[in-house]
Image (cartoon, rainbow, N blue to C red):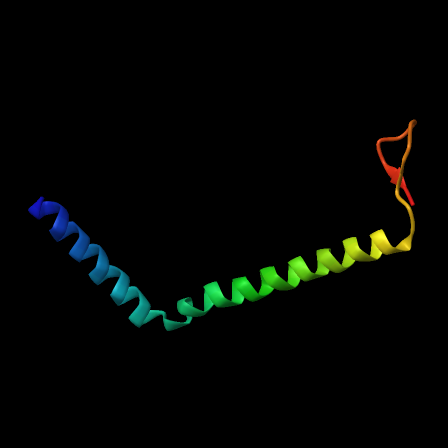
Length: 67
């Protein structure tokens, strides 16, 4: 068990050294979250727009629906 604790300490030290050397890496998760939120909003507005345009009717001859 002592070796596992020593390994965990070494991993934490290495991660700390990386964050100290590359502090901008801490901006990746918040930026990705904002971009993902913008992407979701884009698709939600698109779906709401399509829903509000008219009635969606399934086509018997095509796999695509018509509005």
